[in-house]
Image 1 (tube, rainbow, N blue to C red):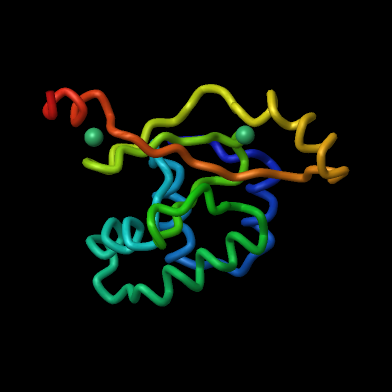
Image 2 (cartoon, rainbow, N blue to C red; image 1 turned 90 degrees about the vertical axis):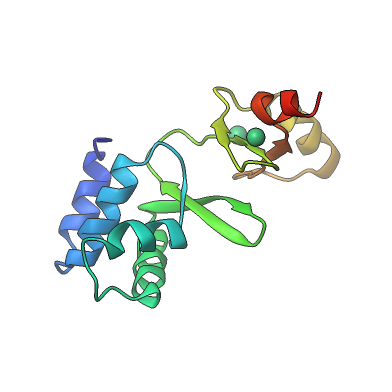
Length: 142
Ligand SMILES: [Zn+2]
Ligand SMILES: [Zn+2]
């Protein structure tokens, strides 16, 4: 279970109580990898049979607005989310089995100054994901 930062705990405490939101936050705290709205829906449906997918989306929107979770990347047109408290991560995704592996470094920092030089932008954030075939899938082909 990931421990929430004081900052996020405080934001949550200031909200009106919601059982679904608590369940969604627990799903994120237990998740090793980013979750899609569908992932969350299927996980929580077991505990709450009346849960609607639209409720999951609505709750996610609210949590994003409050900067409690963030969109990490898109898998096709499916958005994947994670807790917004951790150091940002990048992922490499297997196009075959959809296995997701976090990178333990950010490749962006090495090119950031080049982009600033070229565009004059003050950069506030970045997002990218890398695709390929994982070793397991890769070795099947050989
Ligand atoms: Zn694979
Ligand atoms: Zn990065």
